[in-house]
Image (cartoon, rainbow, N blue to C red; front, side, top):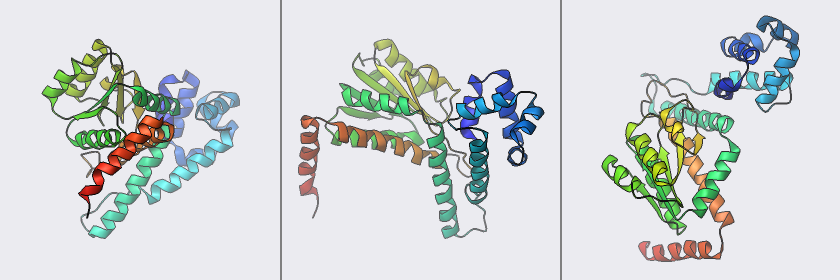
Length: 275
């Protein structure tokens, strides 16, 4: 259903009516035949099939199966934490929320964009990751992984330094802005400055209709339905980490001899840091 919401902006009027009906009457919709749904939405059966295929499914039956599965999963996952819960029960609920966030992100993530970003990072002269607040830890973790590969990577988590660094980035560099809301003013302005200076820009965000997307050459979307206790976007952090882990693994697998030597040099340098 998250992908259905995400794609609504690309739909024609008839498809939008079907999408709105599905989102508002999901439980009822899974019991309807294709003709019954088409009649309720004032369109033909072919439009229902076209919408199903837009979502990457074979047809209406596949759509019903997908929605039924999501309804079943939502009853077991994403449960709100209660004051009466033990810490272990909270842990179990958080696990469910994390699993749901990862699955939802998989449904909205653009595979071609992710591939393009992985190649871009691998080939860039310099990689800078911008993150503030809760996103700062994600930027630092990603930079740490890329540094171990011998890449010139830097996490910048100070808004003044972000502006300074952005003003000096050039063509051949890539700037990655991380913002769950996509509305962090400092991150958006830093990416905008990077674009003016000729650097490629990438955003990692939870919202497609947000300011950060407008200043980004590439957009990687996560999806997380945070609970009222998760004001920091806790579940979405795991999806963000998974994105950067995927990019890291892609680079390892596609690295040339020099990069593999850099990985070896990193591991050798760290040997003396352990007992």
